[in-house]
Image (cartoon, rainbow, N blue to C red):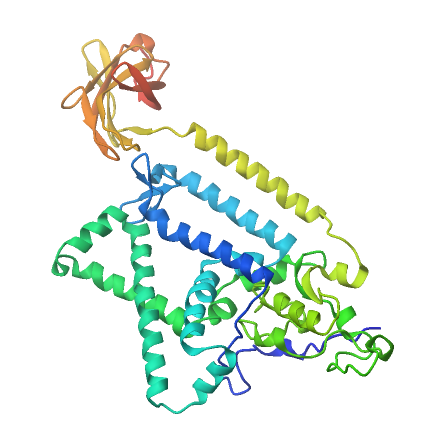
Length: 472
């Protein structure tokens, strides 16, 4: 039977020593086929992240999350507080998708798509490699006294980190207040918007703290996804896994000795070079099995494959695989749990798409004035209402007016009977509805009011009309 890894490592975090002191991680520069693919994905996502708040579709910012003014643009489509139900459903779709993806492929999102990993590994870490050198050089520099070389490298690195953090904070601000507003603030004197600049510096400080000091601790301590995967993963999930059956065999791992026949010796294919540990950005030993610190970045796969090639052993000692594939030689299986998540995902996605198509460019709310009963106006009964009409588009709406669709009656608007709503604007006011008692169904009659743009019906609002109980 193959030797199983020692489980004592689960009693502690790999980046903290026995005294509770931080163990700084100095990973080796990764390289290999999967790393090259990750770079392509990462740079595409970085381009998208930096471009999204500055790209406009039909006059709308591609992505905008202006919480203070309650304005949201998603893929160029404007959303308002009245569309909050769509936001809730989209969040549910995202949660179910992440759960399904984790059940099937583990924490691959963290290693390939997560902004924290992309910025850390593809931006800040690469700059650190450029300034401080590879793992060995960084270890020597860390122990080196504070001479001119160390001061120069530290100041240069910290300065570049701060500049990049400031740039990220500006892009983040563009997502929150809009790119047009950001450009306006940049052009105006600093004294005119000092509070905004202070907030920008706070965001810069947060980003700098995360990428210059906190680093992998975000994934290990702050991010709940590592704990979530422990609940969602099972033996059928595809993860970055060490093949302990092949790597340990009967006598466990051992250093490479070209003079012996490794197959006859009973030793595993793992030559205990520890390169998979040295290249890991979270400082773990993947040979210990699935760990919450593992972000599935695949750096250990590339490094192990390179070593296996050098010692003329088969690649894939560390690879994307499930526990069942390693121990039972089973291929990927679309389990009942995955089918359940997929069904829920399709249902929620269908509901979201349907509601998205049913969403109107104009949102009207007409409510009876609280505390007001009906009035007799000659032979008719009158109710007073407040209205609010929101224009969700980037075009001005002219000649807006109301008409009573059901039952017969008249509408009188306080002020001008026809009005204009500016783009992404709102109009509100008061109106009176008068209906003959002959058309009322009792003390509460449902009515329909149409919102017209010229002769075009653009929205229908339903409400209740109060009247006397008896008309005899």
